[in-house]
Amino acid sequence: MGLPEKLVPLRRHRWARLALLPANTSIPRGGRGGNGLRLVHYGMGTVVDAEVTLGDRLRIDQNVIIGRQDAHLPREQSPFGRLHFGDDAVLFPGCVVLGGANRIGAGSTVGGQLRAHGRHR
Image (cartoon, rainbow, N blue to C red; front, side, top):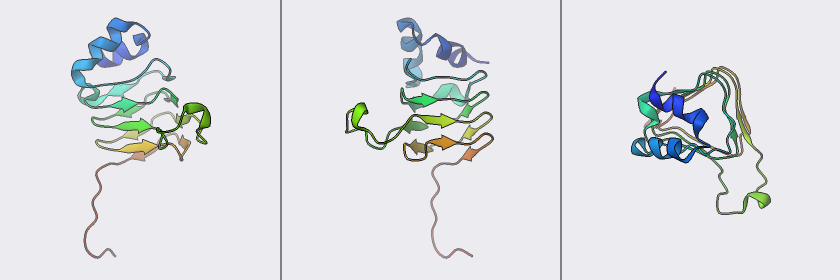
């Protein structure tokens, strides 16, 4: 377990949130985190909304965004509920998970930066 993983449970303290800034990691204190969170590459560029519940042993790679797709609305007016991630889920680099899918199941894999070109069979 690296330094960022040790700091995430302490994020209610200002110094812990400031220590995550050099990696551009934003995990607010309102989120509920599971045990064994793994931030690959120090969670570089990772942003997690406050209304997220993270499962146990969740792996988050770099440049992952977890949030609301209606961030322009006040939270009270949002039709989307809290996002829940199951245990042992993996979020690969560059993936974006926005409200709408309110639950990512246990053991799920979410990929990112998929570009499809041409004909597919």
